[in-house]
Image (cartoon, rainbow, N blue to C red; front, side, top):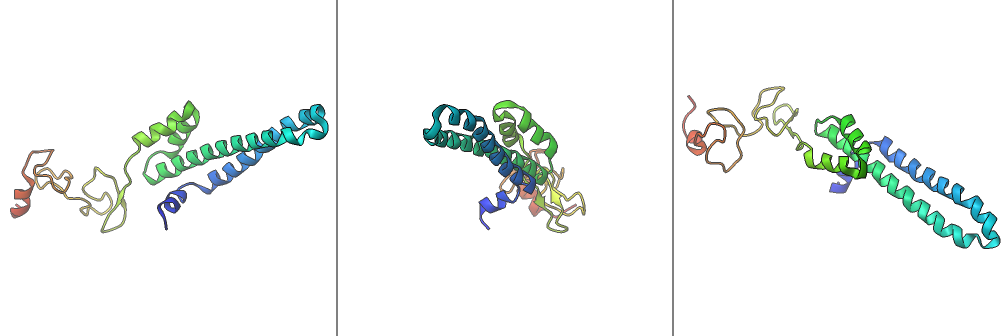
Length: 170
């Protein structure tokens, strides 16, 4: 499964169907708005004018559909990351010029890591699983805060990590 397929699976089916319906409805609306006046004014040569108008309506419908799919992705991705999907979808919808969607991508939480013991999702800042208590990431032996591989000292308490790992637990 490709990366695109994995991310496409995040978009809810309701958002996909809504995008299809938005495209069809917008295209039909533009055709209905421009069809009658164009037929009345241009007569038999109306097809020369209607084709560009139909294509413009189709481009507008596809643009709206892409925005609906983007909002669906925000909703599904926020749910996957343990964030509030309704809040972020509404922010993306009501803040103009897609600023809400951009804010979501700037402020979203990292993907949770599955616990090696029970499989429950653990957030990035957690060193231990909230469900079973198993170690999810390396932790400082002094203050038990999560540490990254390659760090020499703990950022929480300042204790040297390599010497602490070599020393027997107290």
